[in-house]
Image 1: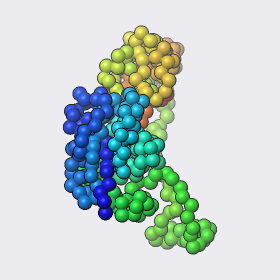
Image 2 (image 1 turned 90 degrees about the horizontal axis):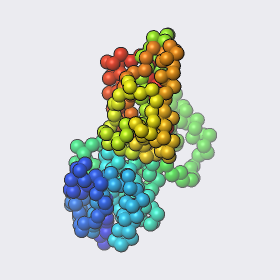
Image 3 (image 1 turned 60 degrees about the vertical axis):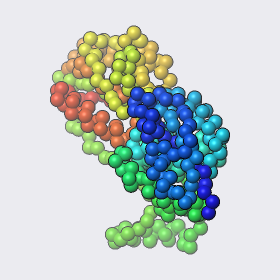
Length: 349
């Protein structure tokens, strides 16, 4: 079997260019394999040749998407790979979004793409239809397991001449693509068989697996709001002017805590939005549109609530991973409890 030509996409860290200090690195190409690509090249030495590696900073890829996409597209047209590999990105939100963008570019160029990613990474949810996404652990600690899984998929993909089969057969994450197939039995009969197996506690495979959602029991209602201390928490990205904590415009890795004790109203002179997923014009002119400090001050003055908490918490929900959001929520909830807050108003965009 003749070796195929692969181009590998990496972020600044795995591309050995630096850490967060190099997050704004524009796309660049290097000859041959770099970083994890070197180990993959060893796993696939009889099958592929990693001709080049494209490296781009996570910040640049997410904040200057059009520029990044244009340059990456030019590189792929120039290099003419047989297959594009991205990551593994694990649960790094910005990296996952960049890998997903590369898969979308590849699909537009009619080039197959393989991406290593954690299932809760927003890059998988948003770009799954554009390539084959191979499940990894949530951090680079699982690199040792991730690379052989990616290599095994590529071998199978080549063996089956670009038709690896279903996600269950080939061990990749579902792409959200439905294909008609013929079955020996009609749907009603198959459904009854599944139902009977379920009733008996026997194993069965659903033909349409349902998503699993967290269920959270609501807290008891506040009996007397006029005595309650109320806090504001937002995923709408409202921050003091200048975004002092540098919360990312998408795939946030952090949140901020900001004092509002001295504010009765949020104006363009004091606050703005860091969010990159909606038109920021009105939020930048009047941040109360997203974080209603002005209305709560009115309720406080009228005695309808006891007190507005002197701090609010803010992050950006745009593309932020579920795993990160859960961490933020646990930390913020503990802080609010320790600060004597009885109720929270959550706002989005």
